[in-house]
Length: 260
Image (cartoon, rainbow, N blue to C red; front, top):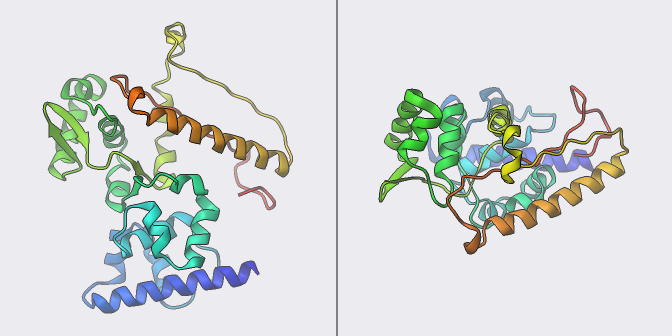
């Protein structure tokens, strides 16, 4: 059954690529790969019907988001074929797509691979935005140069003296976001615990797949409640606050049977 699902997914992606190339005969697979942030080897296998193994989840998301020119994740699920929609839900979890305003952009995925740009954009994506002083105070002259690049690309705009991100509610490729986790953790200040703003919990144990599934469901529920609090009009204020919700195995690779 799983093989049939993967075959249908690959067939659907192959059809989308072929249709796009027919509409744009001057476009090469190399150019499509660069624009969609998908490895050119993957596109070549898809186009030639040689893709046999399961696709990398974020390659699928990057590809369909670019081909359909659809950044809104909820609308994207409605526009793709059922096999693609099922694949995306299975790998990313429905909660990622619950917020109708969340956008997924391949140009942001490309630009925000730069760590300084990512952190500046994250500040500017807050409801209150950020300002030049905060950028320079946190990132110095490098931050100022990166800010100018983001502004030149239209990714950050200035309004009434404040700097605001083009897409306030944005989602990135998990591989891009994961690369910046150490930088976010670097903002954690244990010496300021008495101020009452930060928290840190770390737990580990060897568990069954069933127990891990329970924890994931509980974490998803908590994240949704936290998201609701953060988006209440009365909650919005001047403090740039972030949370990290992360759980993983203490293994170098996922072993067969691990919950996805």
